[in-house]
Image (cartoon, rainbow, N blue to C red):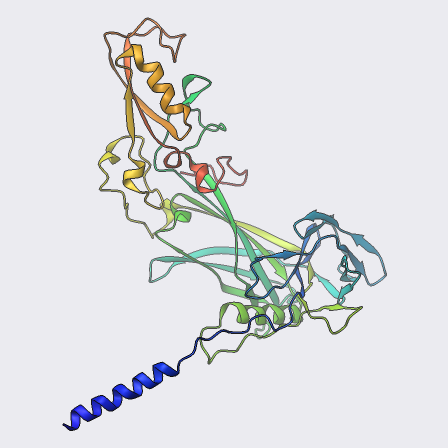
Amino acid sequence: MKTKVVYIFHSLILVGFLSCKKAFNPNLTTRATNYLAVDGAIISGDSTFITLSRTTTLSDTTQKKVELKAVLSIEDDQGKLYGFAEKGKGVYTLGVTNFSASRQYRLDIKTSDGKIYQSDFVPMKVTPPIDSIYFKENSDKTLLFYVNAHDGTNSTRYYRWDYKETWSYVPLYQAFYQYKNGQIVPIQPNTPDYINICYRTGLSNQIFVGSSSKLAQDVISNQLLGGLIGGESEKIGHAYVMQLKQYALTQAGFEYYQNLKSNTEQLGSIFDAQPSIIKGNIHCVTSPSDVVMGFISVSTTTTRQFNLHANDIPVRVTDNTGTIEWKQYEYYSSYYYAPPDVDHCKFNTITTTPYSTFAARFTKIFARGDSVLISRDAYIQNDAPAANFLEPDRAIATGYIYYYAPKNCVDCRLKGGTNIKPSYFPAQAY
C-alpha cells in the first residue's frame, strides 16, 4: 500500500511539473546590432584585401550583410595615404605595396552613411620563414597538421597562420569517350573535355595563433594547425595540397585573436568563459560609442606549400563500393568519395544492332543531356555498313556496345570543383 501511495505521489508531482512548463521564446532582437565588422590585415609585399560587413541578429535571415560604397585607405605616421579599390561584395583591395618597417600604419574607413573609422597606428612587422609543415595520424584515424617556425632575431614572438587547401577527386566512372558535335570521339587528357579528375579548394575556417613569449628563444615548435581530416574524406583520397601563410603579430594582435578563438571555438559548457564583445583596435571617430569588430595588423607574410599524396598516408579508407556488381569494369574509379546511390549510378548500354535504328536510338538518349558516355566494346555486326554515321571517315564492319551513365556520376565538375589543374598542384594528382 505504501509503495502505491509513493507511486501516486510521484506521478502527481510529474504531472504538475509538466503542466507548469511554458514554451521558451528567447528575445533575440532586443540587443543592438548592425556593428561594422572589419576583416583582413595590411600586407607588405603583396596585395591587401579588407572585407567590410555588418553584424546581424540570430533571427536575421541574411547570412552576411556586406558594406558597400565605403572609402578605404592606409595612412602612415607621416600622413602618406594608400587608397583601396572596391571590388564588390564588401571586398576592398590594395595592390602589391611595400611598407617600411620603420613606419607605423593605420586603416582609415569612411562608410556611405558618412561615419569615419580608424584603427590604431601599429608597427609593420617582418614575418620570419616557415621552417616545416608535417602531419600525424591521430588515434581515431584522422590526420592532424603541424607547423614549426623560428625567428633568429627573437623579435617576432607572436604568430598567426591561415591556409588554403586544394585536393583532387574523381567521379564514380572514368569516361574514355564523349558524344560531341554529332560524333563519338575519344576524350583527351589535359583538355577542357577531360572530366575524370577535378580539383576543389577551401580556406581554413579556424583561428591559429602561437607565441614564444615565455621561451628564451623565439621558436614555435609543433604548433597544431587543426586538420582533423578523416580517412573517409575525399580530401586525402588522391592528392592534397596545403598552402600555409604565416603572419607576425604584435602582442595586442595576438591577444585579440586568442580571445576571438576562445569565443568562437572553445565554448562548450556553462563552466567555460562566456561569449562577449571582443574589442579590437578599430574605433568610430564620429560616433565613439559605436562598437566596431576587427583588428588591423601590418606585416609581411611568408608561405610554404605542403604536398601530400594518398600513397604516403597511413590512413586508408575502405572501398565502400566493393560490393557493386559493375566494379569489375575498367572504367570504374577506385577510391571515390562518397559512395553514390547504387541504383541511380548503375550504367546502361546501347548497341549498334540493329544498325538501321541505331542513330535514332542513340540521339534520343543523348539529346536529353543527362547521360554521359563512358566506354565501348567492339563486336562483329553483320548489318554494319561500310561507314559509321558516328565515325564517317572510318570504314568499318564492326558493331559496338556503348556504356553510359547519369551525368553526375561521370562528370566530376558537378561535385563543385574544376577540371582545370592549378599550376601549383603536384604532377601526380591521381
